[in-house]
Length: 210
Ligand SMILES: [Fe+2]
Ligand SMILES: [Fe+2]
Image (tube, rainbow, N blue to C red; front, side, top):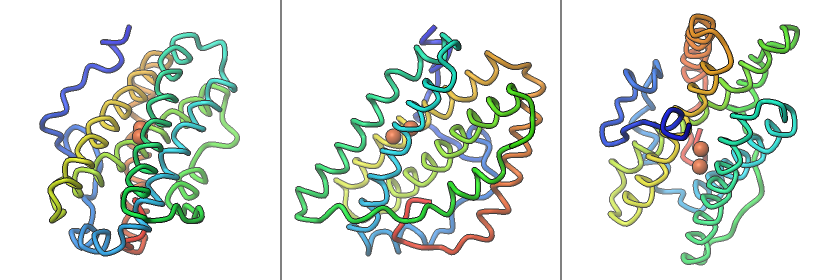
């Protein structure tokens, strides 16, 4: 089961062709993020925390989806491990975990979720929201792993990039496990189009991951 869900090679992550994202991150973002390390690490820490809690709420909401529960249980641990890694990095640098900010990107995605569809439609949207957040996070970590001056930090972000690419694949595979592939593809395309427009609208800020 594990191989089926997470069989992705992460050496050459091609954002457009593999992750499907329609718009690459503005190249200025890495330089801005580099100047605001405390803020970007704080925001990153909360992203990891939210990834863990969202997996927990998926398990609570759909306990009867046995394969999903089995696959997401270890992801909770992994995401919490990511949170601790970021926390450790803050501590090492004598930086503070700041307050959680309003997450405009995620809030806008949540607004796009179908509120009045069938149970299956809502389930699919929840999985695809996660797939998209993982994909965009992976793309952002890729930018950091390639564009930062500090070699240690480039390697630090490379690990996250690989992990989140695997999670993106997992959420897509879970969607296709429970729903017809055609339906998943059609809705995924709608999500990608929506995200492209959202990215165009959002301000380029160095103090947040998205
Ligand atoms: Fe993570
Ligand atoms: Fe993740």
